[in-house]
Length: 141
Image (tube, rainbow, N blue to C red; front, side):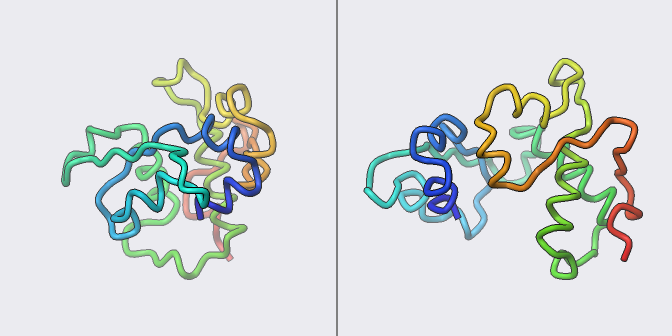
């Protein structure tokens, strides 16, 4: 997946946006060289692992997880949702202002700091504050 992001946006923008990746020790992250290095075997990012059961080591990610669970309660299968629905959910979540960002939303900050092409790649859009929905109603079929 990281290679497709790099291909679509270029190595410079990839390195700018993903200078480091903070993650857990899930199976998908167990080969750090494959993530840290691009297809040219040059280092493009650094991987850092959080300790198990230490959500405080990445609290801002945990806030997103909290919002995800407001929309998709625990026990909900994500297999039932299309990529378009996941993108919609993440657009609503990332448009929610955060005290930790000085009242800005992650999306507003991303629009300032990241290339527009990168946001387009992820198919995320900014949702007006008065239209944000963080309940299961967002994805009701």
